[in-house]
Image (cartoon, rainbow, N blue to C red; front, side):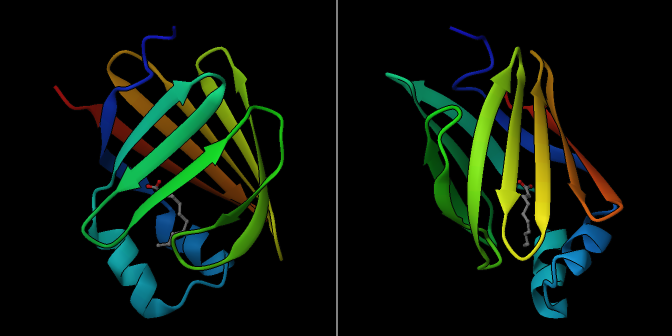
Length: 132
Ligand code: DKA
């Protein structure tokens, strides 16, 4: 079982998140809330069913998926999208299709998780540190 499953990673740094949310049409109040919190992210797996939990004072969200199988997702800001996740080594690659196409690549290491999120020509990078 990959070492990063079941570990909790807390947001440590964030670049371009406001621009990323703006490009997705997220309103000013939600952007402010979204930018002010440091979510904790945890990926677990049980019999091929993966759960990605994101917890923060603003919102808790959870997606459940099987690798390569499309599922319906409601994003923390309320967009309804079709998502598909694949795992490439220690990198979880999520493609979200809605009004816009978004990719979120989360690379897990024993000490941190780095999320690179792309929409249009915007690249947002968020680094999360492992919680002991
Ligand atoms: C995270 O996991 C952020 C995930 C991206 C959410 C997209 C828009 C959120 C608006 C509050 O840290």
